[in-house]
Image (cartoon, rainbow, N blue to C red; front, side, top):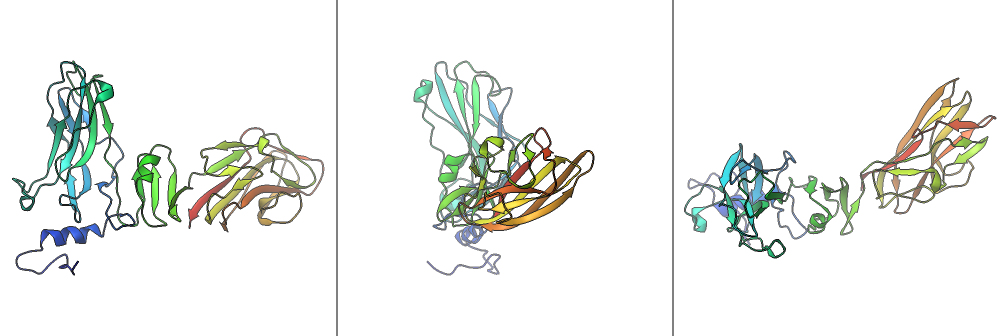
Length: 349
């Protein structure tokens, strides 16, 4: 290893290409070994490769991070639709087409220094035996298409296109991944962030493990009659979980990982009385202990709403429970339907 020339360079001969690649790699998200993550910079999550009315594919605009020589990176931009031809469909069975982008450099033995978007066809075989063909050196996969016999266009039912381009991000940014399998194949430093397209959950790297955290979790109840004094909503049968399985509900909302959280509870009351609503930490006893935030709702002859929220640092396993104090009798009804909720959202390590 050696100290490399700066980028940009004042060298009259220009900067050596390896020095440029290594300098650019510092801008890209990388794993714990320092290897940059190759892929598309997701200006859009729309499909990059689509079918056409002929035996050709259309590749939309993208910006990609590639590595032709395996050391450092290159940045490749496609600013418009590119049509790339493939061969006729097989007469029997099926084949796999791989659509790719490849940076090319004469220093690496290529005939040109201009990148290309291409297609490579696999061998014809029964669907269960199809094998993806290898790509040229340094190529980044964009999509794979299963081409069945008799297909006359890539937009027809005889061709199934699957988007396979990985995504990357600037160093320190949130990396989009397609699913949990893709997520687990990437091992960056702790506190790195990722977002899975398959389940819409954000993840943070914590102690070498991915932890899902950020989907707002709401738990609703209906027609709960609060009695005079403290009411702690801790019976799980009252609640329906919405939007995430990453925050458990037993006797309250359970923090899945240590960190800073935004906690909130909201009430829609039918009461002319004054009700104090709030949030309790690690306390399901109906008394004024463990109370971390509160708000007073002064009711009227109709429905009255109130919300209480705050940010708090929680440990793994800490439990947040909504609570309310009814100062007067008779008892107070919470509105019918999904009108009473609480949420727990991770906001930082």
